[in-house]
Image (cartoon, rainbow, N blue to C red; front, side, top):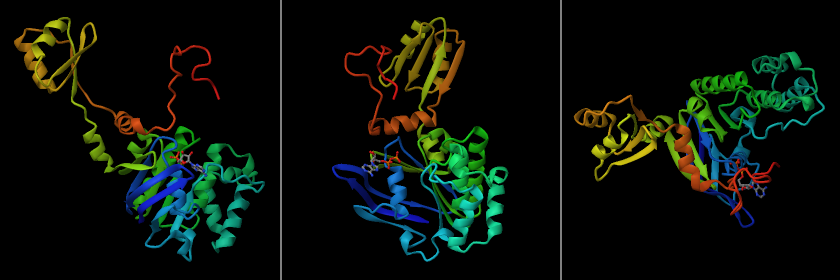
Length: 316
Ligand code: ADP
């Protein structure tokens, strides 16, 4: 269990984390979502004592992280992609970590196999790709078979097979009773990995909800109707709380009525329908909507600049 209460962090004038309060429970995967710069990493670093809060507290299994006598058995962390800039081999990196914390050598070989690095275990970890570095970082996080996992963007740099592997691993750890807290800026990934999500923007809490509720809340009630008699249908549908938008000459998008009602009106008006589709906002859209005002850096062109003109949205 992770408990965050009134947690804030300022860097000079900049408020990176703004009065966050939430609880991460065992037994499920909890996603930590927000656009880049929202404060996810800073929050995670404060939870494990790498950054000092300006205000508030964070505890892991009832105590501040630093007060646990056996931190690696309590909490496994992956906080920076490629934290391992090392001339050591992957195996020696893990062996050193194991020796420092009193874990047996065989645990290292188990882990190398588990994360799929057994073939490259003797290669220099500093030369690893981002994805291999992530696997090594995850192996290190799992070393003490911890009850809590805190992983910052663990699927960054992984190929689709690696992404699926991390997803299964996290679900399996949660099913075994662990607390799993995993950040991402990708709603689509969290939608299939997490059962619960905490969403932040500009350091503030925007949502603390189950994925199921988020899906239900995101179900926009728009209906798309395709008909060669669009103008006639639009006129017949008009009403006080109904908006009808012609998105193409023969396609209407209707808000404020269920698809069944649109079908009934079409029948009464003798309008032929080629298509009648209830539209559901995707989770990604719900997330974009929720965080639209919270994005720190948007890619808007300078005023007056033509979109697509040379230099606009320039490469960095
Ligand atoms: P996220 O992980 O959601 O992308 P971060 O926690 O990395 O967000 O950053 C949150 C905000 O705090 C950003 O605006 C970032 O620039 C700022 N920030 C993070 N670390 C520092 C630091 N050491 N000094 C100054 N500003 C920082």
